[in-house]
Amino acid sequence: MSKNIILYFLLTFNLLLVQGIFIQNSRIHSLNQEVRLNMKSNEIESDQVRDLLYQLSQAQLEHKTIETKFYVEGVVSALTNPKPMFEIWHAGYDRGSNVLREETIVNTVPVNIIEK
Image 1 (spheres, rainbow, N blue to C red):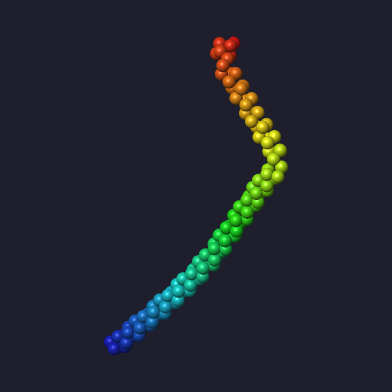
Image 2 (image 1 turned 90 degrees about the horizontal axis):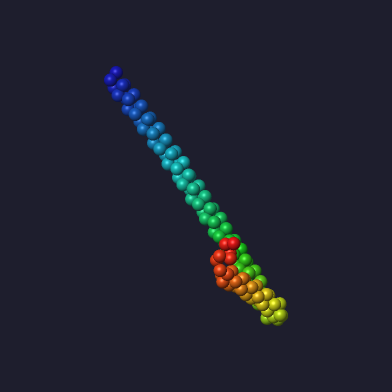
């Protein structure tokens, strides 16, 4: 009788041990799959980030090219037809001179006249 109890105990212990090993192996397998999926996700994300950064650099390059194009067009236009540029410059100079003259007049007026 005691041999049967010991035998049942050893059999139960072995079954629990095998079941524990099986559960651990399935957990290890699922964790390995999760790690692989995570690594694939990171690869995809890094590829997308690299593509987005490339597109951003291309857009910035295109924007700088357009700015340079307009700058060169403006310089060429000013060099080929300088008359409008000098008219604008003189108008701005005259406007600045008028403002300076008005400030000088206001600053030279006695304070008691401004208070009245």
